[in-house]
Image (cartoon, rainbow, N blue to C red; front, side, top):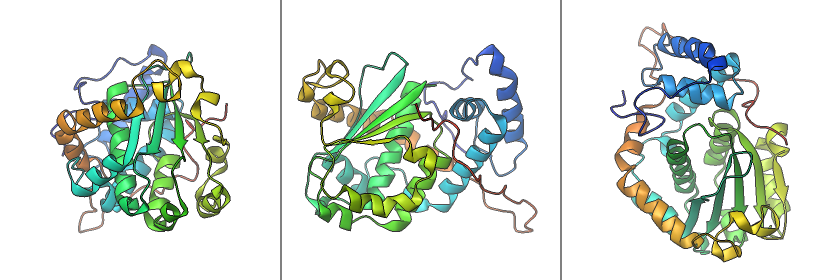
Length: 296
């Protein structure tokens, strides 16, 4: 069991639900409480997953079940979530992960990711996936119910040596998690400063990508300023906000000081083991992605 408030650290009480969806949130939460293998999930989880699944109760059940299963079956990524752990710190010191401060007119949060150290030896792929998931969980907590997310991956500095360090098992877990279980509405994924070997990257990941996610991907050799406009960007790209490195340092410090215990506690958010008598059976995994993956 968790001892802290999840999925929103500072919201121990249920968030206000739009009136037209309140009954569905109640229905999903009652279902959660009836599942003996979901001991740690809250009413706010019901709200979050329903919102991500466009308020469809059955899709939200499947997504939450998949979330719990992946967390239980991938301890290398979802256990021991210590932000001060050596592997996570190595990742955070070799990358920039930032939530940009200004949302789009539609209410979408912009997330920007890039390498800060381009030495491939500084990348442990499993630890990178682990760190990425921890950062995103904390950002969901900060944001609450967010209308949607736009992700910008900057390939500047990425080398073939980085590609050689990708491990298939954590990659498969990551792709399944993002497509089937991550409780947000993902609106677009921009790959900027696209490397010349992008076809090799896509050959590796395309077999794991469903059509819904593939439709969200957009590649460009240009920088982010050509995609979202400078008004949303840091000074690095001609925008009004602090440099990426400054924002990363601030958000990294927040993870280390405000979210360390919370992230460790979140390790309990997983499907509980089956009873010895085998009386509890898991629901079959979903056959489609979260409906929150939308093609605009």
